[in-house]
Amino acid sequence: MRVLGIETSCDETAAAIVLREADGAGHILSNVVLSQLAEHSAYGGVVPEIAARAHVEALDTLIARALAEAGLGFDALDGVAATAGPGLIGGLLVGLMTGKAIALARGLPFVAVNHLEAHALTPRLSDAVTFPYLVLLVTGGHTQLVAVSDVGRCERYGGTVDDAVGEAFDKAAKMLGLGWPGGPAVEKRAARGNAAAIDLPRPMVGRSGADFSFSGLKTALRIEAERRAPLDEATISDLCASFQAAIVDCLVDRTGHGLQRFIEETGERRPILVVAGGVAANSAVRRALEGFAESHDARLVAPPLDLCGDNAAMVAWAGAERLARGLTDSLDAPARARWPIDEIRTA
Ligand code: KG4
Ligand code: ZN
Image (cartoon, rainbow, N blue to C red; front, side, top):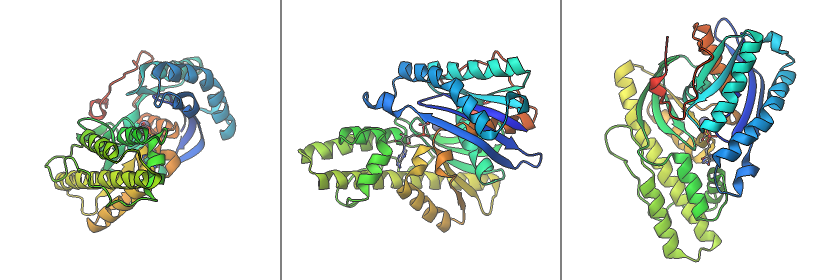
């Protein structure tokens, strides 16, 4: 089954073709992503109206490129999948309308994909992971621990009560004058700094449940930065290293609570822990989770970097997984700015 996927929920315009074999194996035939970084960097964040217009301008060409790179025409497709939410409504409408139009014109089944489920199902495409597994989803907009027991069966164990972890990285970088997006910039500076130099809080650590909180950490960073102003290069690096270390501690602690519940509920002896989303590109985060998994007899799966950030292969794949189960959506499926992962329709 060959599925075209379209992703326009935030600031990446993306199109991809994925092949799902009858036995469930997945192959990426093409995966084209156009980042709008340059359009938004002057504003220090994503501007919804600019994003929507940029999607309109780029999407047709990207879909043509995805087909060309896969060596396929529209005739070779078995379905079309587009992200319907959650995300910025203007961008979602662009991708959703385009996907529906192609499906209608070509008489193809259509799938309205939940962006979070697409992230959560990615390890089945990249690493042929089997259900059930626990996902730590860490992006610019979301920070959640989700138990995935089947397509459309995701249980949210916990999430952030304030900022998403990627957002915290982005705000820290902005505060320290490191530009946007912040995660890669903070990671780069952290490599040169001393993580023990500045004492920062670890919000939620030790608490029961699997929720996260990062706004107190962000405020603490601001106070420490103001106290040391004007900042020299070495201090900026120390602030980044200390901040990143605090985030890593929070992620590991909350994941520990989530994994404990997952084991209790599933009885898995060697539980699978997946880390997905843009922040999974952070090597300190990956290293810490590897150590955590090893000491908890868990198997850590971290999809390759180009599948961790926003992309359309994950959308095409989520579409293929749904189509393989006979799950399709009608052409009046709405775009949804808010669409929690545990409110996905399964039948
Ligand atoms: O999943 P993603 O590409 O987009 C969504 O938010 O859905 O994630 C982007 C986020 C941004 O906040 C970015 O700063 C963060 O992931 N990020 C990182 C790193 N690379 C990207 N955070 C920390 N370290 C990184 N190396
Ligand atoms: Zn995402």
